[in-house]
Amino acid sequence: MDFKNVAATPNNPKWENMISRKVPLYSRGNDIRSDFERDYTRIIHSTAYRRLKHKTQVFFSPENDHICTRIEHVNHVDSISYTIANNLGLNTELTKAIAVGHDLGHSPFGHQGEKVLSDICKKYLGTTFWHERNGLDFVDKIELLEDDQKNKKNLDLTYAVRDGIISHCGEVDENAIKPREEFINLDEYTTPNQFAPYTWEACVVKVVDKISYVGRDIEDAITLGILDKHLDKLYELLQFTVPDKRINNTFIINSLVYDVCNNSSPEKGLCFSDEAVDFMNKIKAFNYKNIYFSDRLKPSTRYFELVITEIFETLAKFYKGKDTLTELSNFKKYYPTLIDSFEDWLCTYFNIGNKENLKNDTIFDIENQKDYYKGLIYYISGMTDNFAIDIYNEIIGF
Image (cartoon, rainbow, N blue to C red; front, top):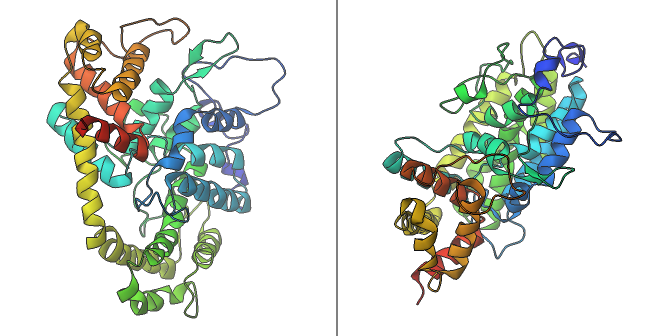
């Protein structure tokens, strides 16, 4: 419990910054939840959170119920973060909120989909797409929940949770992780892993994001037969966590959780032993070589690029400034599902159509073509794998 004095509590000098919101939440007068508990429930009631169950983690395998999806990964991060935070004396309400929200900005088709959207952004906007920034934009600008007056408002999360979302990525290496002191404007983030998180709790989620996937990806790869030729090498690598020929994610997680709890302190930071760091580096190198860059994944990677690119370019050609809705309606008989869905999106976030009971403002100008492209990126990034495929099939169908 060495971290109690630096936890996210009212005794922390950063506390008022941690619980600050860009827009205050409405009050019912009888709410018994803390600020971070409200964030947690606002996230799990959002549609972006619900869609995670139909988004790829690593393997696109909709026919196999036992392959990890994005929402399962999020739940693993939630569970492991709670264990570590609870053991160290940190604020578990904050880690839970960050954990369930950390991947809200993930594209369909996992990191391969993220790369495709980034390539599109470079071509049309001169920027890059990264899911941490997209996640912060989703909770700040895109996701809507009804308030007590039935008006739809953004999630308006606390600074500490928003910071945890945009700060969660980046590899964990020999250098210990400590939170930054500066209370920065999170819009200053221009690249992934640019700043350290603001809280120790966000540092926990950052570490756990790595702990949660190394073993589970191995289990899934074995289930799919991808590692049949590499099991002997894998047994050798796993001696750090499992002393015999068992490949069990719970043993891997437990060993790493125990190690980080046993080696961390506010003075040193969150850190692993040298042996654990060596294990993590070797197992990640093994995964990249034999799983993520496997020939078995290359056909699906090419397919994901085709699907996302075709959806973007189909909608991009319909842009006609303030007459875009009219142009879209001309093609509804060919693409009914796509056009209906995208028209709703435009009317919600652009200065076009009926805004009653939606938001106090809009975030895109329909007469600005780059705004239209940005809106397209947000729209596609929120899709589930299957919805994107259904839309692609509608586009190519006759």
